[in-house]
Image (cartoon, rainbow, N blue to C red; front, side, top):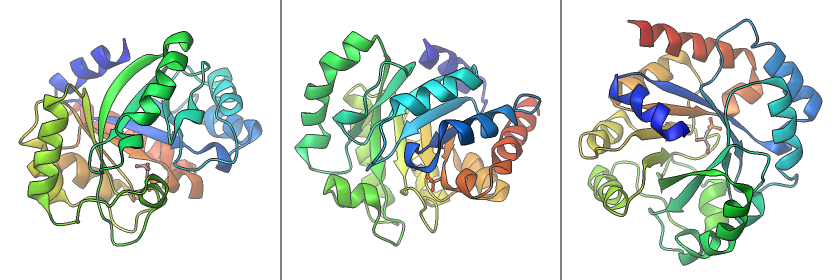
Length: 247
Ligand code: 1GP
């Protein structure tokens, strides 16, 4: 189980880097180019595939990813249509910052039989959308309001509730393409109040930002947009994490 391996890494203070691939931004050919470039370089620890709104299905892209890398591929679903047996597992997101029952249980009920049939590893994930100053796709598509940027107490209480409900990860999400990532203060406040690993994503574009988010307490960081703009950041970020973990 990948979560057991990850938990062991986190218990040793290691940091992990996940690459988010949006199927609408790639073709099987561009995926091959992206991943072949990583063969002799450090790569991500995990590849997530998904998005809040997709015009393309996820299965074809996952198949292309798996032809070109051994890195585990997990679904990062925006809704029930994004389940695919080609993946190794799924971050089963509960949008606990919101109050829309469809993203707390409705989609999960519809997806459960498909997930079980596909034999996917399931990682229950408490997903908290944090306001990053602009309206995001995930907020609009999920019809939920994000937690205000500076309301650390609300984020802490929500993450604690997620842990108490049995989630195995807490994910602080500023939204794909966010202008600013989740604040370091909020990351630290949440990290200090939960006993499960903390994932942070949204708006991380530079190694300096990556470093600050890890320093604040993130165990795993998810990067999507920066890698779409410049694919070299994938090996750059992976090399940074690898070196950091050796120190
Ligand atoms: C979005 O957290 C991820 O769900 C990644 O965000 O695309 O801004 O890196 P970016």
